[in-house]
Length: 334
Image (cartoon, rainbow, N blue to C red; front, side, top):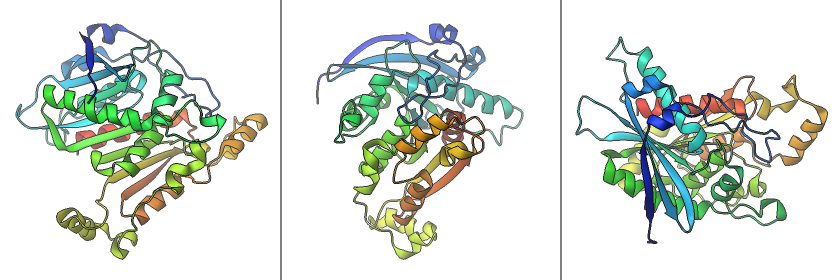
């Protein structure tokens, strides 16, 4: 394992004061929009339930920032925490903390329905931008031939960073549950989440994949994947018994709970009342041979417990709030 450099662990007080609330229309080549680069602000009231900090880590001569929201108090301090790892941590970590707080506050009068607070880990960069575009393109995409994909290809190394640096750090510092680990990402982050699912499916227990950039590499991540077919009972939708048996005896594909989200205007750009002809042409030029809905069906055919959510009247960036809410709900009630 390479030597790791850990730098400047800071408390969340400065973080809580920084930034302006913004849910960005995320910019990637297929999104055809520029993002709001102001880092969102964590609500000060979230101090009631979370201690927020960050840790900088150097890995393979690259610098990363890991954001952590740890529950301030919990009924059983020895009970292991579910862990939500979220990509694009600069922007989406604060959104996740806010979303947990909102759910927690809404359920304050009903302790029986209140979900357990998860540990939230944001995978980000020591950068003042919400979305460091060049860095995330480098880290969240898999290697693919062609000039259009020349700036990417670092997914395998970034996965090594998460597995060999981040998760051991979290395990040392916090009581993280081994069977309650979730990974969530949107756009390129959704592509990386899919990359982990297809190549290292046992790494996490649940995956939330928002608007994955399936156009990257002309969809080779899916079309070149080598997953064994599910047993007939699984493929037909009768997953409960067969999936449980597969996990018990090691046979077949170990079931993983997967949620795929896509915006209505991503699936059908022509329905977007604000769509311009030139933009529509560029979107069609970038379209993948595999759609998010087809990906969901394909995963189910291979034994995954996959679910598809179409976010109404949403474009690419408009899916982000739904991704955050889906991930947070799963983490609080895992």
